[in-house]
Length: 490
Image (tube, rainbow, N blue to C red; front, side, top):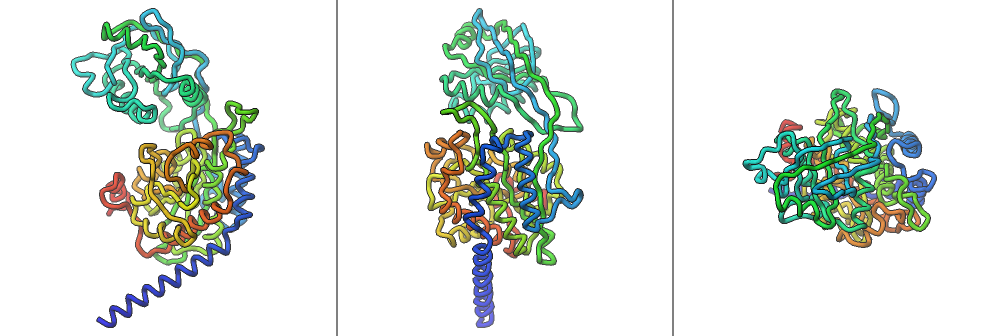
């Protein structure tokens, strides 16, 4: 009995010594002035918002690769380069779109799937376009028209989440396309037009050259003219035109580096430290400023990972480290989509993905970790954050679906535990939206005293997870638990 107590005390004391040693290692490499310098460069006007596949995006990538080199992080083994090419399809925006129903024309149209079309024929109204609405209705060779969202939820974000399901259902039933009706104000209309009708990108599938020609649109029916037509009859003639869309192949790049672990066994397990370095580029001017610099989103996250790279390269952890800075997140998580299909090291050796992404912050006493309680590394993160005077909390705004809106989700879908480390916010409120995807998100608006603590917290959490003798995993019952069991053959 006495022997077991002594062993437990010895283990606790040893763990304490290791923790203190790691804290000192973090303090020795994380520098507030270096954090500030990196962010001011990445979010400078000269990089024009780092939009994917632009020269400025590549300059940012080269800068990041050179920083990894300067730290002693090793390049991609097969190529001896820090840049992983990412092949993308770039689709130009719509030049003209119109819909005629019942003698009225509608031109506030938003393209979910960018396809040119000219159609004159029948359309069938199906309420919300869900499975129960298709009962005893033949839509083959026709268009489906329905209301966005569901009977109980018509909010724009929720409607986006439901749109893919509706599209797949209509396609399976033999429809030529689906048109969803919304009723939005001018500000929302302008935002939808900007994000849905402008240039788009997708990951190139070199094994499948066949383009998806299924049409999926939203149309703004402000005066409910379409609804009125179909309230009198479930089927009607429509005329639809979408023009000006073209497609070409473009290239961007992920930035990738490796540090081998020190433990003879655990070095075969890798922790991914990731962030996206792209932003939305140049957009609509606001008070003569058209550059969306993206300091919070996501120069901060990018530099957080650089800080981890500098530290772990100098003081390697037991597990190996894989640093990935993604392109194309703002275009639909494209860099991470490409990476999980083209990994430089087998995915089943990746035991954790510790992503860093930000929209903003409104509480400098917090670090907000999206998915904190979903993995067994929760205590490592909470304890690490507390060492620098911050409190770790889980997602305070689940209605935003943030876990599924950053690069971590592509790794989670493969089964890899993957939370996202974010600056402190207790609600997705005006203090967040003031900067999120706005021209106001500039380096001089950040609190660097807070960021110093935030960065130290992240780096210590990285070390704690990478040195923990227990391999992290999903909490049982999580959405991705079974995918993880399959990946790791548990």
